Every structure is written in structure tokens, then in C-alpha cells.
Image 1 (cartoon, one colour):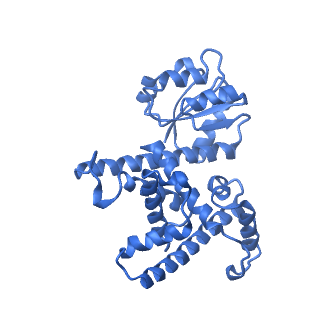
Image 2: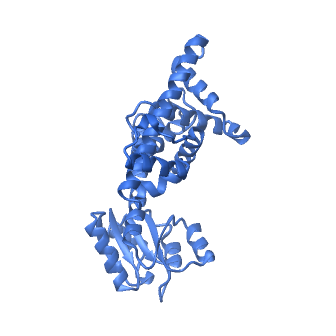
Image 3: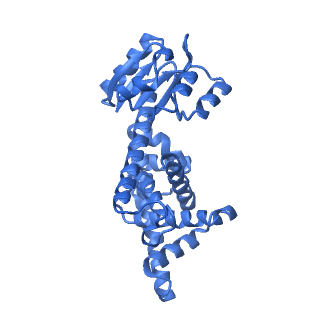
Length: 310
């Protein structure tokens, strides 16, 4: 990643550049002391991926600068500010800024925010590469591959990304979760989700039918449904173990901060952390999983990534 830093405080510019270089987050493409010296042509010439820009500067502030480069700069923007005005923050969000770094600069916050933005950009590039590959195969606008609902294939990319982030990818049960994402997306396209999130039983029944076909005997379908429930439960436990281990190693770990309280009840995460720390046998775990919450969050997060990147 290539970074451009715009801030009227030389100490802030120096600190940000030092963190980026020392943590091997990318390269510094350039710096500016005010937004008036930044435009789309400059950022394009320097091949900038991520612009870090101060909210308040004497000649042209960050919000006005972002507004002026919006049509020409395709990279990501991280706003730097010690201002907590809801109106100003709202203006920044309305321009597409997704992340803030607050002053005074905190090293762990900078690392965490930049890692999140970098991961988002990698996901976007992955989706674009898939779209180019599909276009090369003649699969594109108006064409629906292999019987899937329109654009359902697209939700698998952010789905796989999230499973990887959660330390689950490659585990038994991941395929079941991805099948659920496709089923939920199909329901959304039919406006069925407006009636509420379907029951877990419905989802497990649907992915069993997806795997074995609707004409399969009910007894066999029930066995597959039960097996899928067990696979999904085991892989969600794997995700909880992964996040709890990250939290034990570094409580400010970006993945732990971003995902632990989203996908799990935080009291259960803390229980798991204590169990790991005390070497308690997983078979004796007292942690209670909210599987429905996990699947809901997985879908909503995948859907959000999909809508932002496509």
C-alpha cells in the first residue's frame, strides 16, 4: 500500500510515517502541510492507495479537500482529527470516509485502522478480479451462472473473506455457512427477509436440500440436517477459540476488537478467554453459543462488504 499524509502538524506527519514504515504497513508516497496542496492528479501521479488527511487545516480543511478529489481519487481515505463535533463527523461520513484516527495519535489505533482499510481494499481487489475473470468467460451483465440467483455468487467472496478473518476457512462447516449465505441472499432478493430472519431449522433444512436435492428421502434429509448442525456448531466454536486466543495475546488486536463482540456475546468471549488461560478442557466448557446471532451477523457483514465493494 502507498500512503499520502496531509496534516499541518509536522510531528503528526512524522509519527504516522514512522508507524507505517516500522510496522511494514506500506510506503510513504508523499506528504503535504495543507489540503490546498492536494488534488486528484497529484495522488494519481504518486499512485496513492490510502490518503490520511487532517480534518482541520488553516487553508483548506480535510472535508473540503475530500469533496474536491471525490471524483478523481479512487483510493481510501482515513480522517485524522481531535474534533468530536457530530456535524463535522457526519459531513465526513457523508463523503464516504469510513475510518477515523483520533488525536493525540495512538500507535495501536493507527495500526488497527490501517489494517482494516488495507483488508477492505484487498477484498475489493479480489472481487474485481473475479468480475474480470467472469467477464472473460462471457459471464456478465444479465447472465446468471449455474442456476444461482442474480449476483448470489458475489456474496461468497466476502463470505470467504470473513471466514478467513475468523480463523475458520478450510474447516468442516464452512461450506454449510456459505450455503446459508446464498440461501439468505436469495430470500433477500425475494423480499422474504422483510418478514424476519428465518429460523435455524429452516436454514439447515434448505442447505440439506441444496446438497442432496429435494427428492431425497426425508429420513436421509434429516440425517444431513443434523450433521450440518454439528459441523456448523464445531466451526463456530473454532471461531470463538480463535478470537479468544487473539484477545489473550493482545487485547487491542484489530481482529479481536472488530469481530469478537459482533459475532459473539462478549461475556461468552470472556468466559472462553478464561477457560483457555486456565487450560480447561474444551469438553468441559460452560460457554453458550448463540448460533443464530453468529449466522445473522455473518450475513449482514458479508452483505455490507458486498454492497460497498461492488
